[in-house]
Length: 371
Image (cartoon, rainbow, N blue to C red):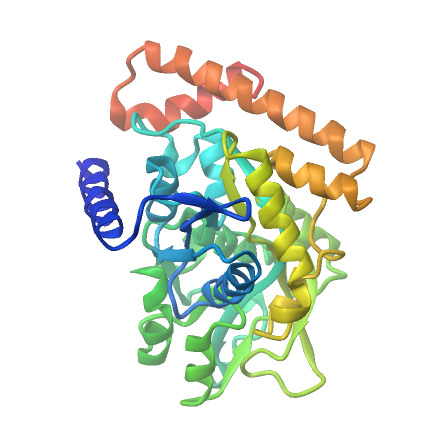
């Protein structure tokens, strides 16, 4: 029912867009309009994307638009429906590829997704400074967000707890929407929030009361091992110039990619043109936000980790000397994994599992299929 309701909303959005825009066309190699899905307007994720798409739009004369959602399904569903062609996504790009969490359902299953561009972004847990929560160990017994329909964020929070040897049983979980976290922290509904560290809503919080970030020790090898058991894509690296940080100081947190992703059938030429424009216009948007400097073409991730890169991206990376034999080998492995996942999903669904049992039984099926 939820999926059908979402499709109805997407249909209404499609009609609204079609009513106010002429038919899709290509402008200098990019469709016009080209629509992206991402997080809400108060987030740094949105601000980065808005700066980049504005630069690309000026460069190509194509109109690039952004639609937003707080939920993983809400960001990926417009892409599946063809309303959005690209998405700057959280870990739903991984969950969708694997058919995991919300995507282990009769309406989804493993999706044939590809990474288009993979800039890194710092994320951390923000607290009220007066509470004295300085390390993950201090989270024991605290009120922690259980972010609605957002397994990406919830998984990162669980990884923060794992760093200190804690589990979700050691904290009090509070249901809250992603965009509602700042207000919930201000009111005391939660004791920490998890976001990309440069969101405008976080600077607004800093103007109201003192805030501080939970520090990770990059030398704690056992803690980092526990993090990587849950989320191998995470790096423990420093960030600076965020709310609550004094000038010249830094804090270690999770630094990982929130990639621009698309489906595998996206045009190779269009993806290559988009990547080329994002790279060539970097000097124009690099100072737009505190995080856009990390979009520098030399600093983005160029070796696939958990889903394959798109052929259009690979073509650009090859032309610019940033594609290696190791990256190609990993990409081939991930493409093969995706093909096996989708083939096994079909076999699995042919068994007609009860819809409530699909996530558990699909996880078991993947293990039995050596996936």
